Length: 265
Image 1 (cartoon, one colour):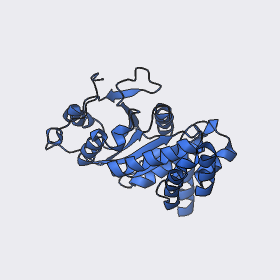
Image 2: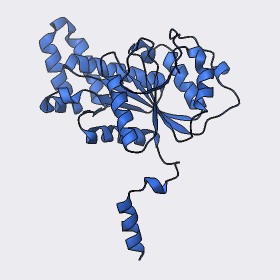
Image 3: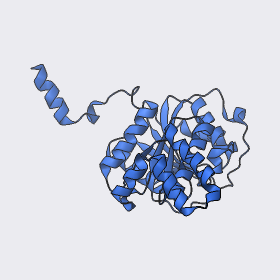
Image 4: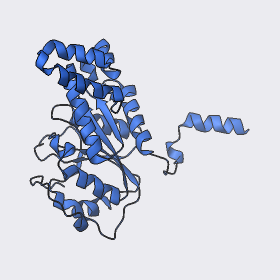
């Protein structure tokens, strides 16, 4: 079921919040510039969660998207539809997991109130939210730009945040290491070689942001299941996922059961 209408920034939160409440659930808000692999991330994360026994639903928030590589649970394109969204979410089980695939316009996360309103509504409905900011690196300038965009989104949305370096299967491993633990000296040297002296003070000031370690990145290679598992581990840790979920016997691996029974004998 999908609602096809323009994504609008105006929102009356009180209209979406009623006396109903939703038990504590978890969701990912997947954001980032266009072309950074958000939909591919959602597809692979959905498949990985399904394979590990975590029932996951992907919600599309991009009105421009007309082709999907993952099953779409539903879509929301009007902020005024949040009351409808709340009623729809009440139909799902308490331990269902949601991934929101968001549009690629970074202004929605950096300074416009649209995504902030959505996240506030989800939190009021009992959702534990983790913001996922996807970034594809090809040179130091884009990396610095990604740091600034991620930092803006973190400040604006006020959510637990995991910043993911996507498409790592397309990047040389040696080059990747330079960005996982970058030094301001390396970034500044590379930027200086591509800019004139006029921009050196600005480049130096921007690179100094990296020294505060306010933004860190987790690499994700969609060809490597361990890489996807590591990203999910960071997300679960950020929102304390699973602490209030009752363990099910059917989900316990037989080897663990056998080992436990052997220790009790």
